[in-house]
Image (cartoon, rainbow, N blue to C red):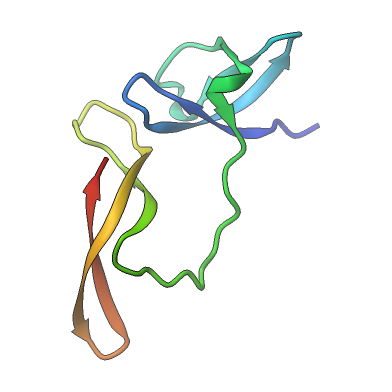
Length: 102
């Protein structure tokens, strides 16, 4: 059986990719992507299912987004909350969004 992919809320509020290895009455045990932390248990309120990919997503100014990033070299990448507030057109059919992190 395949393990369930989830996201775990970290101390900074970022969401980190993990796989469920066991389920208990009030919590789940997970292993993190690339084993950056030891396998451990988390309460259900700190676990969420990842969103389905949306390759047709159009960003607009003021839109709340999640950005897959890392703020320190030794830190793994996680999903951070932010707001899209500027779009810059680079070339025909291409643009970049500027994100302000919450």
